Image (tube, rainbow, N blue to C red; front, top):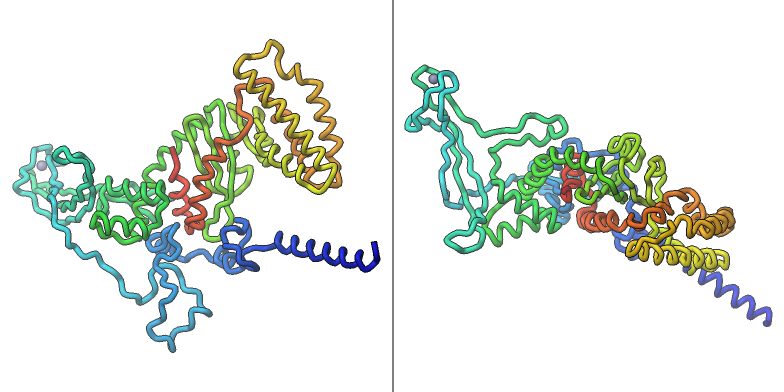
Length: 472
Ligand SMILES: [Zn+2]
């Protein structure tokens, strides 16, 4: 080859390499890629600023800024009423939600009242005498919008109800004034921004529909509002819709203790984790699945979270990926799907050693998988741990050989096997145990879609509510 041809070839190679590197480093900030393709842990300086300066009053956020409606309360095209007196939007970041001095919106009561519920005391609290409802004197009241989904006149459908609830007092002949008030939940320090009582405009069945639309159907607060307005003629503000969802989060909280107990007692658990952002701060969503319970937790990616859940040990088997916090537990199972994917990646590398190692890993795992499937159908006379003992040892040697490989991903995969050696092969002794973590990964998929739509949560209360959306 002539020297000038070599130069040309070299220049082409350099160009190719440069382009490949550029492609690798592309993100939403330096290319046309959408922001959702960015790593969840990457954040812009603006987001970091937000993370460091959480909203001063999360009541404002909670009421006006639903988790999955980032435009809520903010009109990006809105101009200040007096543009000369106000700093421009490019220099001052508008706070989310209701703006100072912006006109408020009241609900216009146009729906007819379908029924009046009088909450009168029945018996005197002092002498126990029956009270005459004729003497009831109302002192407060509120309206409740709800839906009735019981078949009406043999027809299925939804009927909107708009009831007036009256509270008041009846004087007893003994002189005691007996009065009634809407019921309320005792104060709970962890929900101090969400006091709950019966005064709310939304009735329980309508609240269930809202929770279903927002959580199960993943509709934003605005879309939920639009549906209720257009299809049911129910006018609700997005902050009311948001409050219903948060109240539901609080209402199901007591269930969690019971579910955690079931998780602790389960014979087989799957665990996985994925990033989650709360007001720009990187947190992790954990999922722990037993045959009957699917528990989501949001917190830091640390040992502490698992310690709080399990204590020092887990009773049953725990299937997980190779994240080191799981290593503390005995009775661990390792997911083969992860290593199979990585081995496949190696077979597509530009490195001879990596290709060979990748192939050997996949052949070995494929062989064992066939043996496990067979063992599940007809248990073998000789345990698989004995049958494959020599080959397992040879595979261990292979991993040892590649532990110091010059190819990064090869040595990482070899190290992954060696780090969790026992956990990988438990399934040979107990072939009915799973060898993939698909259960947990499937549960997280739903969440990943929700994260894509909502871009995370904004407040602690929002996070607390959001993670209960799939509780059960
Ligand atoms: Zn009395």
